[in-house]
Every structure is written in C-alpha cells, then in structure tokens.
Picture 1 (cartoon, one colour):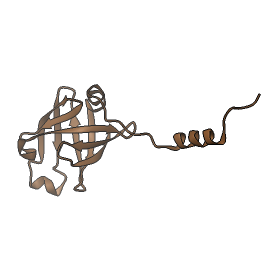
Picture 2 (cartoon, helix red, strand yellow; picture 1 turned 60 degrees about the horizontal axis):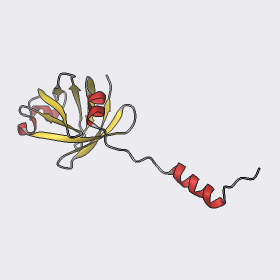
Picture 3 (cartoon, helix red, strand yellow; picture 1 turned 180 degrees about the vertical axis):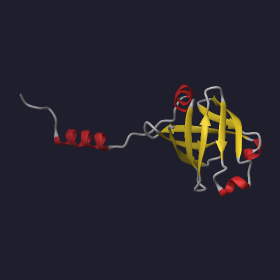
Picture 4 (tube, one colour; picture 1 turned 90 degrees about the horizontal axis):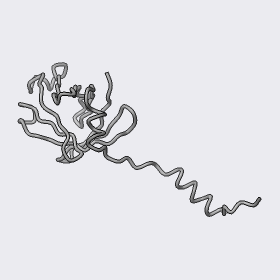
Length: 129
C-alpha cells in the first residue's frame, strides 16, 4: 500500500508538531478552581516573591513581614478577591492605596501561572502549599 504523504505534507506536519502551544487566558470558572483555596507565591517585577492565600470565601491574605519592603507598607493585610469578566480582581484596605486591580491569568503548567494586571504590569506565580 502506497502512502499519499508527500515530503511537503511531512514538512508541514513537522512544523505544526514543533510549534509551541499558545497559552490561552483562563476562564472565570478556571480561575476560581485554580486559585481558590491556594497559596500563591507571586513573583513581582520588583524581585520580591509575595505569598498570598486566596481563600474560597473570597478573602485574600498577604504577608510582607519577612521583607524589607514590609516596613514601608502594612506588613500583613487581608483583602477581597473575586472573578469578573474572566479576570481575577482584588482589593486591599491599604495596599495599592485601596485601589481595585484585575488580572488576566494564563496557565503555564499545573502549578505555574502568568498574570497581567489591568495597568500592564505582569509576572508569574507558583501555586501550592
């Protein structure tokens, strides 16, 4: 039996197989499932990894007490988190001057995500206890 694959077809298949998968932003339901109840170690553009706990009840808690930057801000704080329009949103009482920020979340694997804040700031995070 003769194959109908030409060298051009084989080349195209190799290009498609070698092309990296384009990561899609997570949906609101996926964000809730992925983030809710998790410790998220947020890598910031400032070189600080910020541990945040996103409780299932919509409370997010952060602790900067182990960092020198913690002396400039409230070292520990609890805020609120929710999902709106397929973005993770959060608001802290004093951190970020109490401003609400929302983030597009993209999966980078089973325990890693990329985040882009609505003002363009971006980074990655690792999840797990």
